[in-house]
Every structure is written in C-alpha cells, then in structure tokens.
Image (cartoon, rainbow, N blue to C red; front, side):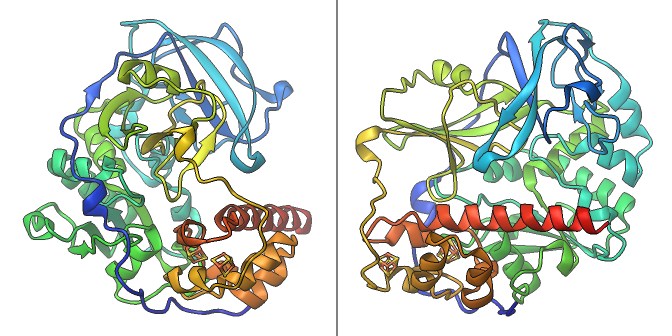
Length: 428
Ligand code: SF4
Ligand code: SF4
C-alpha cells in the first residue's frame, strides 16, 4: 500500500459562514412516547440480556450482551417494548431496543456513582453514549498511546451548527470535561479547534492550546481539523489514534463536563434541522427520539420523492424511514425536496477532471472511480490512494456526469474494513 501525505488545500471553496450562522437557542422538544436505541452488532436473541417487559431507568447503564464493553446510558425511564435487528447504512447490523417512555419516571443513580469515581474503564463504560458519542475505545490500545486530545468546536458539514452552538453555550462545561479527561487519560496535550473568528475569545477554556479553523469547506472535516491542530498532515491510511490523537466533538466534551459536574449524564442531543428551503433551527431532543417527532414539531411534511438525510448536504447519509432514531452522533437532520435532488446517472466519465481539481488531497479521483465502479477496492487503495480520502464529498458534488463517487468510496472503505476484520478474527 502506498502512503501519501495530504497535499495542499486548493483554492477557496464553499464557505461555512455563508451557510451556517447560529440559529439561536434550541427548541426543547418533550420526550416521545417511545425511544429506540441502536447498539452496534448483529441481534443475537439467545444472548440478549435485555428483554421485552424489562424495566429500565434514566441514567442506568444498559448492555445487551454480556461482553459488551461500551454500554448505553438509558436516556429515559420506561419499559422495553421491543428488541430486534436493524440494518443501517451500508448494511451495518445493529440491535435495536425500543423503550416505552414513562414520563417523570424515577432516574437511576448508577451513572452518578460512576461520575464520582472516574477512571478510564468507567469512562469507557459510561460515557460512550453521551451526546456527541465520545470514542473511548482508542484509549485501550497500548500499542498506539494517545498523546493529544483534539476537541472540535467546528462542524464538519455545511449548514450544521451543533458544535458551534456547544462551544458558545457550554464553555464552563467544556473546561470541566477537559479537566476530567486530562486527569483520567494522563494527556500531554489538549487542543480545542474553533471557528477562526472566535478563537481569541477561548484562551481560558482549559485546553493547552486553541487553534482557529478556516471557514472554507472542507476545513471542518476531522482529518483537516487535525491538520490545523498538529501543523502537519496525518499519513494517509493511518487512523487518528495511530497518530496518537483522540478526536471528540465540543458537544461530547461538554456532556462529559456536565456529567462530572452534576452526576447526571445529559440525554438530550442538539440537532441542527435543515428544512427543504435551507432554513435551519436547533432542537434539543432525547437520544432515541424518532425523526418523525422532530419533523412534526418543526412542521416539516415529507412528501413522496423527498430525501431524509442524517447529517449535512455533503457528507450526510439518506435514511428510508421517519422512525429512524436520533443517535448520540446525529448532529443534523436535513430534508431535501424531491425537486432539488440531483439524480445520479449512468453516464460515463467524460474525463473532465473536475473531481481531481476539487479533491483537497489531490487524489486522481477519475481513475479511483473507475476501479470502485468495477468493485476493485484493493486496487483502488493500492494504485489510487483510496485511503488518503478524507470523506468530504466534493468529488460527487462537482461531477458533471453525476457519478455517485462518494457513495462508491464509502462502500469500498466499509467493505475493506469488514473483510479485514473478518480476516483478523480468523487469524486470531
Ligand atoms: S471525498 Fe472525493 S474529493 Fe473528498 S477527499 Fe475523497 S476523493 Fe477527494
Ligand atoms: S468529474 Fe465526473 S466526469 Fe469529470 S472526470 Fe471526474 S468522474 Fe469523470
């Protein structure tokens, strides 16, 4: 496999400032009658430790399977009404747990106890399902020690304002979260990345450094935030953890700070809702809330041919059901009108080179796309640097033949990871 560093960012592109702005305080939506939680992994009924009729309480740690390291903090008190399989994006398997919510039900104090005596194992067991989905798994690999915690106060996609809201709304909580994490994780360095226009206001938030991020898309994409923070590119194909970096969003660190400060883990997720006309608003919803609940509250009617997207316009993924729940990682919900959807085509590549010029890491995308279309994923990686791709979606955005290049890229990365995990398991 060839290793290539990021090359320079090319000319100015789409501008976050033109699209995001801050839509004001979020509207607090009441919990729905039923919530659904998605646990990664195939449903195994014989091994499930959570069954229909079980009582669960807000703040209680739920682990469906015994060996599950990172459980889910239950966002509401109620009764389990369904447990079953769910197939997500790219065919990823999940186990879905639905809870009939009991309004004003009593909370559990298990999380409060955990927050009071924090260590790495407890943080991993209790914090991974907080709003923002902080990933603690990277701290458990002794072969790739983490030296830097990189906290992103910018949003990866256009229109989205969730993390920009978090840095403005919760500076004290971010400070508290950073302090707790630095202690528990023995970090040498913490970097807070912020929109360039506000970076000078945040010297006291508690990070050892702050860094300003350019307002030009795709500078908020995590690997480019890392480039701004570290001053040098990560080697293509290496994960952030392999480069000694743990990446978390500002919302996640604020949620950790709120948990440590109050003993009560927040269960509410800030979601940027982007309407068909591009209008946006923030809502605060309990994790597990079905999308339908948000659409009803926002008065958005989804018509035949419209598209429901989790995430923003460049990197979001379409979902097929308004029953899909908000997860700890759902930063945005976008509804695209059918008439505005640019349909993909089966036109051939005309070698116009637009994708190559748009690619911020200078991949030869027209050639990469040919190999991906043919399902030759390993060759695409070896010859055309699939692993250097930072998942910005600009190639698809500019393609005149409407080839779904970014979808091919995602599928290829997912398939390569899946195949390699299976090979590793067989090898062990
Ligand atoms: S998504 Fe496309 S444009 Fe963006 S880095 Fe990957 S190949 Fe380049
Ligand atoms: S933009 Fe589309 S048509 Fe043009 S070279 Fe790239 S893949 Fe081919």
